[in-house]
Amino acid sequence: MIKRLMGAVLLPAFILAAAPAMAQTTATFGGSDAVGSIFDRQNKMFTKLVNERAGGKLKINFIEGEQLGNDTQVIEQMMGGIVQAYGDDLSWYARWVSDFNVVTWGFTLRDANHTAAFVKSDAFKSMAEQLRTKHNLRILAAAPSQPRITFAVKPLKSADDFNGMKMRVPEIKSYLTLWETLGTRPTRVAWGETFLALKTGLVEGAEGGVSSAYSAKFHEAAKNVILTDHIYIIGNITVNEPWYQSLSPDLQKLVTEAAQEAVQWASETMKAETDGIIAKMKAEGATVSTIDTQPIRTKALDAVAKLEAEGFWRPGLWKEIQAIGTTN
View 1 (cartoon, rainbow, N blue to C red):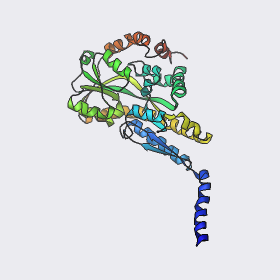
View 2: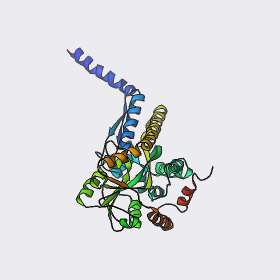
View 3: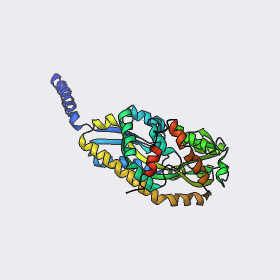
View 4: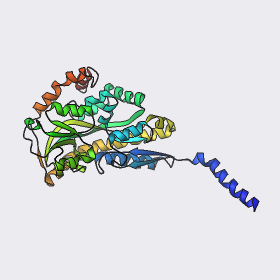
């Protein structure tokens, strides 16, 4: 009986000793965008690619929606190593690297082509390196996503109609400053609470990327959809740097390539889907229109020198970005 018990003890000990060679690395991937949005689908694709290609050596667990918290909370968890990866809008990093404020400023990026050129520029690489060295966050991939458009409870027929409107803004200082500059009364509301805020009158307007806002049903709560295209979103997948460095070189390569593939897929899908999603909003009862954006564009651009002087981003960065893509 004693020998049998000893054998029973020795066998698990042997298995445990061999376990490290068979160990699987598991990573938590946090997302804070609406389920079904372009970033949600991007993140699902990244998860699928890694899990299929890692041969059991790495498993990504993607937590959808705001189950882990809002964007700021998930990023803070990633910085602390609780969450290993995050995919969404690049502008959230402005909280930690001030130069990212420039991409949240209205009409800085002219269109998708200008945005794509910016992501390849030295200016962007400098921002990404600050994020990595100062905050342990590595951007694996970034690419243009959809433009941000405006949703309003009441019709907006001209730029003057923005004056005094209660406008939902995210917890990003430059967004609040932008909408103050454009004449609205900005109110900070979490993304997941925006639909209800519009429904109850807490705010009279909101803005967001086409796909993300559609998935969050903004157009049902605020039926006036104005194609302002005031900001071009940059989608990304970012990881905790110490976690990334803990991976073997082959897994580092695998997650980087999977991120690049997923983000590029999202960028291309965005281009193909934008018009169709706007048509869906219209079919579902929204009134879609355009206005002359030149007056609000002028307000935004006239404020650039003041913002640089206040340290929103480094002096000369806005002008540097304007020159990107204008020469070969």
